Image 1 (spheres, rainbow, N blue to C red):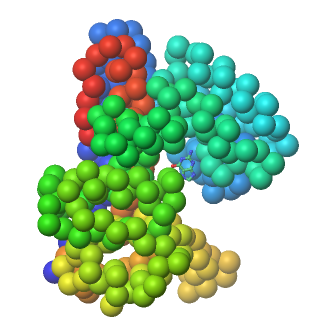
Image 2 (cartoon, protein in one colour):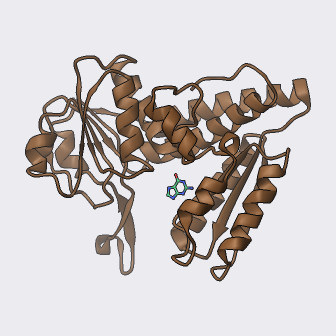
Length: 299
Ligand code: GUN
């Protein structure tokens, strides 16, 4: 019987710890963790993500600030805002929601965020810390960090002897995911759209992480019997069976098929998604603790 990995429950556990750490920090130092989220333009999916991040930050007892800039905002305007947030001692974490409008150089904006407030883990110094194995000093991107916690829940901390295949080579998910698996002693392959015979490669994986952004691309017969399958995809597809104009969320994995082969698998929704937000909160409370020179919780 396949184990359905409950990301909602795991995220709730992390959020409880974040709340406790945040309350203790406030009681003992008078400091509240501060998270600023910046969104440029009106992409509806990004609006939803940013609103839920800001709401969760409030739930955690943080100072939560949301900056909404118009689609027409120039690069300098965004850079000025980030500069102000970098200098604001009440802000411990800064997140600029991606994608940014095409007229803005995302790399320039993201790299302008102070490394010690880079709770997304996108600053090159944080990327380098993760790549060189200094995970304790890094901010690790939230989605792979959350996925790794789910993998540890099933397989434990040491993945020696396990093979992992990461489908997708993005800077946000695929590459940092591979680094985390490698740091836990897994033997890791990163696969992507130019990889030949993806199904055969996936069938070799004890751990299969799908982060390609293509609805239900991973079929049941791609999954090694007993494998741990982590589905990072969140894709909205038409669902006429629910009524005209209705839609539903699916992952990058054909869940029902894959569940017939896997030992454990994350659902969509309710798998990796809630973990991403929980790890953003965790990174923010870690940042506040570091700033205040206090013991830093690990998640
Ligand atoms: N857009 C989609 N995922 C992310 C993320 O993890 N961080 C930011 N800043 N933008 C995103």
